[in-house]
Image (cartoon, rainbow, N blue to C red; front, side, top):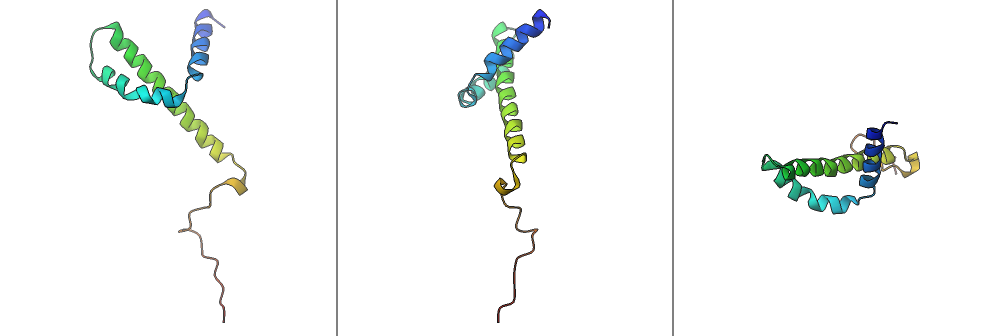
Length: 92
């Protein structure tokens, strides 16, 4: 593994330790900073931070989707009742 890959791997490990709820609280702040373009290192950092926050959100959404998808059948939520035939029987 190259030095660049090692550095990126270390950065990713540090980012994965961050709490999504805390990051989401900063989302609007960095979105606003990013939307107000300037030729500055602060603007560039804001874009990177905003992207990091979004990447954690996307990662967690995919993770949760796969977790639900791979649950055993008995733990899955019931299917949409509109498409199922009702379980009815004639009672006299």
